[in-house]
Each structure stands twice: as C-alpha cells, then as structure tokens.
Length: 203
Image (tube, rainbow, N blue to C red):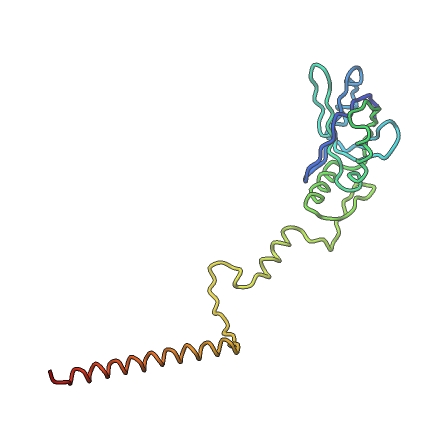
C-alpha cells in the first residue's frame, strides 16, 4: 500500500531520544483512505520521487478546520543518517510518497528502544532485529560497576587501613617530635627539682 500526496514539509525536530518529521496536507489529499490505514504502521518516505527513502513509524494523523498534520518518527540508525537530505526542502511544498514497509511495528519500536540505549546491531530485510552480541547493556554496565567497586567505594563498610612504611622525611620528622617531647619532659623534671629545692630553703 502506498500513497503520493501534495504536502508542506513543515518541520523536522530531533532530540536525544527521537527524530520527528511533520507534514501539513490540505485539500483533496486529506481524504485519501491510505493515510488512516497506514497510521501506526512502519512506512518509507520519499520527497518529490527522488533522493533517499527513510524508514519511519507513521505516528499520527490529526485534522483541524484548515489542514491535516502527519507526524512520523524516523528510524534511529541508517535512516537518521539520510534525513539531512530532507532539510533542503524544509518549509517547501513537496510531493510526499508514503509506502507501507514490510517491517513489523513491534520490531521497529524494539529497534528504536535499543538505539536510544546506545546498542548496536542491524535490521534484516524481513524486519528481524539482530543485536551485536558483544554490546553491553546499561543493566550489565551498572552490575559490572557494582561488582568492581572496592570496599572504600561502598557505603557503611569499615575496612582496616593497611599500614604503609614511613618515608625518610616522615621518620626524621617523627624522631624530631620525639626529641622535643623528651626535652619537654627533662625540662619539666628540672623545674620540679628546682621547686623542691626552693621549698627546703629556711626563711
């Protein structure tokens, strides 16, 4: 199933999670039954019967008194690399070809989820999603980080600190402190002895 309609390429938006393209349709093309029949399905889009085709989910069709708005979510792998071609015609009236894809909608959404999580893989012609077996998931990453944490990283765990040998400068400083403390003790002894001698003197 496919349909070719006259539409205004209204805008293309992109964030860290998804990329959307939006078209406005007016006139007789608004009533084409293929539009409602392909909504919520995976389709391919092409502008003016030239340039690359991109794979999308036909997200929604909404209608008001003036126009019908068509929204598509772009497939987040190879198709996303092609969409820069579409920017050249943003804001223009175009001939939009919408063709139903053989890819299942559930497979498309699963591929989108994996793409947003940073997983790599490929999508076969029959729509099967193959994930790189060497790719690490977010859950595995968090698990590995938890397992590799040292006792000092984990809260509420007391660990006896290993005694490290003193350096030469630390030893010298420690010996000097001991000498000073010993000197204080000797000085105090002399003071005490002097006081005792003064007490023995007759008045």
